[in-house]
Amino acid sequence: ETAVFQTPNYHVTQVGNEVSFNCKQTLGHDTMYWYKQDSKKLLKIMFSYNNKQLIVNETVPRRFSPQSSDKAHLNLRIKSVEPEDSAVYLCASSWGQNTGQLYFGEGSKLTVL
Amino acid sequence: GQQVQQSPASLVLQEGENAELQCNFSSTATQLQWFYQSPGGSLVSLLSNPSGTKHTGRLTSTTVTKERRSSLHISSSQTTDSGTYLCAMNRGSALGRLHFGAGTQLIVIP
Image 1 (tube, rainbow over the protein chains, first blue to last red):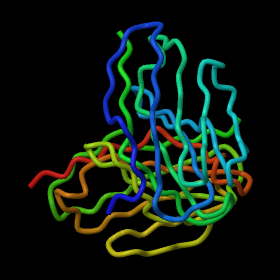
Image 2: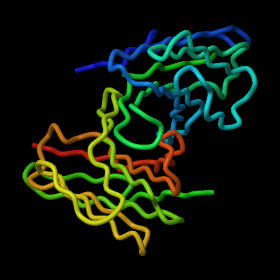
Image 3: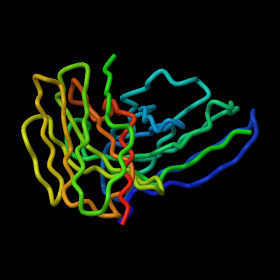
């Protein structure tokens, strides 16, 4: 049963445009994450938020910015997309930062032409 | 940095056969988790096993911390087991710092 919801699931755009991905979790978790999965299926952490505070920022380009209105929402905005931004972006949540299970959304596939 | 190597890269099995997936990592793991990613892309956590042996259903994970390796055994494979199995580890405790391997793609044919 899906409890981490991502929209949109697919987005095709051109270089230089702005894109936003939304993520909402209904599990009552206090920590949310954004991961990038490239064409080789490699998953890398981009951002992590705990109770609306940024706790991890893994040297992603400045055109990426996370936005959190409350602990149930973590959006990802990409200003001026580049071809190398084409990937699947996965949102996840957990209860606590250090233990437990990660729950993932279905993913948002971005194609930059 | 922390490296996670998974083998084999892909595996094709006949339904009913057993699968053995390997994960090797470059530093001592405090956290070691196995995930399943369906062909459609959704990703679920299967097991958390930083050391020892853990069972759930038809899955058995064995992690030998000192040797920096973990395995995932799938018994009596089913066509619905097809997908990608990802291993992730962390030297520390933060879930946000899990390092993922590239995965093993499993195909189970009827």
